[in-house]
Length: 291
Image (cartoon, rainbow, N blue to C red; front, side, top):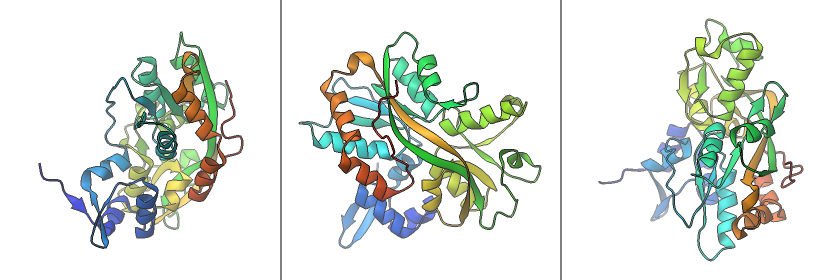
């Protein structure tokens, strides 16, 4: 089948981001591109990769699979692979809940998460324990991220707090079931005594897709992280919560070379500098063991 390639301008238009952001993502390896003469071309299927559309896990005995949707995991895998004789590390584009479930089923070796627990008002550890029963586990902190509302320029619908999303004239697009943002959304609905099942949402499968849906005017609001908002034209960002982003491993795997390599990269000054240069992450206590 013939592959369809896009120009940088076409990629920027599809993702609703600036051309300079596309070039930065190509330079960092977040978007794979080929160079024809002096021009870059991007395979159309690569946009699905960026948007997190392809969520299938391909199992392989010699691969170490890490679940998660944040692009920092690509950087983590890339840096860890650079220290190995062969490319062991692969990211599976699964949301937090589904990634942990894949790990429980033995289809993944590690999972990242940003899951808020309503009962304890904490992130991740209650879910690690709940979704990985019968497993001794170890968890490490990666970063904190600011999340908030993606709204149209000027915030014409005056969205400043969570329940403003459900005013009658607000078109809200939610994230898919299993994502950390969707768990937060459903939990906050419960906190306000609203049954999440009573709500019917249009769905975006990534931060980029949610931001693009608002930027092109199809929706008034979505919830996502600040980093994506800064890369997207024609939206404003209204912050409302700081979330923790952590990663979990099986304790039995902690002596494996692959895990030791990942932890070493996570704690390295070079990796911290890379995240700082991207922006959007608070990397205080990065690599600290939390469980």
